[in-house]
Every structure is written in C-alpha cells, then in structure tokens.
Image (tube, rainbow, N blue to C red):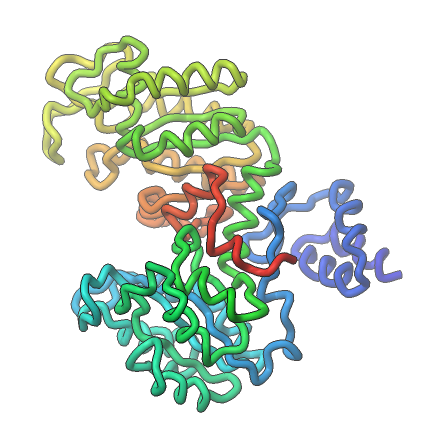
Length: 457
C-alpha cells in the first residue's frame, strides 16, 4: 500500500521528495532504483533530489542520515567555508555564510550543540585582526536567528570550556584555524587538540575538500561519525553525478584565459562528454595550434602541443570539440578600445580576441539545444568589461532557458559563478558550485581528501 502511494506521488508535481521519504521509511531502496526510470515527469529539484542518473563518488554518510537521537545533546564540530570577502570589518558578500545555514539549522533543530570552524584569508604568521572571523559570527547570528558566540581561539582550555558550556540548540564559532600553521600541515597534535571537545564531525566546506588540512581531513580520525553536510552532499550529487553517470547528451563549456590551468580538467571532460565547447583566452592557443592567425591574442606557446593532443583525443573518442567561429577583437586590452568582429580563421595582426562574436554565440546555442546535462567552467570573454561581456552573458541566458526545459545545468568555477550572479540568473541554474579548485579536481576525477575521509554510507 505504501509503495503504491509513493508511486502515485512520484507522478505528481512537487511530490517527489515526499515519495522518496515514504520509500526510505519502508526500507525499499531497491524500489527507488526500479521505479524511478519508469515514472513520467520525474525531474530533479535543486535542493533534495539527486540529478537523474547521478551517483556519488563512493557514497558517503550525510547529516541527513543522523536524526534527533544521534544529535540531541551532542557536541558537533562542523567545518564550514566562511572565507568571505571583507572590506575592513564589513562583509561584502555573505553567499558562503547563507550557504551554510541549512545544515546548521538542521543540527540546531535536532538539539545539537554546534561549533563552527573555518579559515578566512591567508594569515602569514599567527593571528591577524584583519583575518578574524568575528564579523562572520555577527552575520551568522542574523542568518540563523540564534546568537553565535565567538571564541577567542580555535584550540585551548578556554575553547574547551566554551564548548562544554554550550547547550542544546546553541552555536559557537571558533577563531580562524589558519592562525596556526599546523592547520594546513595537518599536524597530528593540533588535530587532536582541535577535535578533543567534540563528539562528531560534519564537513560542509566543499571549497576546501580538496585539501588534507586538520579541520577538513585530520579531525575525522578522532570524531565518529564524520559525515557530509547538506551543501557538500549536494555538490557531490551534482558534480560527481554529471561525470560518473550523466543524463546524455553531456556537454562541457570550458572557458578562462589559460590552457595551462584547465588542461587536466579538459582532458578528463573529453574522455567523458559528448561535446566540449572551448571559450575564453584558451581559444587562441587552440587556434594557433591549428595553424590559424591569432594577432596579439593571448597564446601559450608552451601548450601548443598540448592543444594538438586534446584535439587528437577528441577525434579519437568521437567527441565534438567546438571552437568559436567568430571573435570580437580589440586593438588594446582596455574597456574603451577600438573593436571589430572577425572570423576566427583570420584575426588581424595587432588585434587581440577578447570575446565570442554573435555568430559564435548562436552556434554554441545550437550545439547545446539537445543536451540534457551541461557543465560550465570559465567565461567566454573578458566579461568584467562591458564591451566584451556579451558572449558570456548570452551563455548565462541560454543555460537558464535550457534549465527551464529540464536540462541539468551545473556552474562550477569562480568566474562562471560570478558571471551568472552578475547576470541575475543564479537561481535559474540547477546547481551553482561553491568550490573553485575543488570543483575542478572533482571534474578531473581526483580524490578529494576531505570527502574520502568521511564515513561510507
């Protein structure tokens, strides 16, 4: 009877999560796998449901596997990514703070005594007031609707006492873990001191999951269970799902200025995608490798052979490698430079490519039209300058439209995220990744130490 009810819910809009809860409650995970492929109208939501076809990189336990019985009265250490930009003591972008709220609320609502830790900036030699997390505690209090007490340190007797005195549903923020050089060294003594006051660990900092630091990997050796938070779990669902078991056709848009910084992820994507679209400054290294004139455009001569190898790999794998056919060029790298639109086959001497032309944008839209999963990492041009932003913002609009029609769109990489947010379209994408380096390493197929150290599901 419960199974019939769940199946009926699966066919109703906005009832997928309820259906999955029923299936889980009757311990019919096998039914989930059997039923979903046959259900009409099933589409992933951006919050709770894994993208269709996705599977985790060796599944890890998440905070959702822990209930009130596991959390009530427990001293929980949660690693958040609270590395926010500051202007003096003023937070200029609180996105990362707000992204941490769902996991924190879940822990607090289930009676945990929650202590957050994070790094902020790059302190060089011990504590520096400009890198204090104190402004974050103030903003986090506002976001949670709960006072977040601020600890004067991240280890030591005073911190131990503050954690011990913390009651159910109360919150504390430790001071910047990178005030100690032992944090990044993953020093065993520092790790033990950091973990000592706590019962269990939650990692919700995807942006640092590719680092084996004390607060991301080390503490898991002392705290059990060690599980992912909601944000980290969502990142793994989308990014790993898109790579390991995507809904096809799968396309990747790889932009940015340099081949050297993207070659590993580019090779990995060529091995996994149906189409790979190249944009940004790296286009010109590829064009020169193909014997085209590139004017004064950015070219990495040391990577011409690498570009040729990527072209050959795509041909070998039967992957469509797409370069723009039209370029906006300028006579100087300046917002007020003279510009013209030229064929990518013939960029004139003395001119540099800084954006895709309209014909290139239309070609890319046509290539993406039939795709069911799209990963975007890196802008199409120098979008910070209005004269060279059209190609990037056109891709933002295209992906928003495709998402509305059921395509899974994943935005990974700081500049891509910044472009989507600047266009006001972040909410229209399936998933916005919070980790630049971590996103790239996951897309490359690398093991993320902060994830590997968590308990297996």
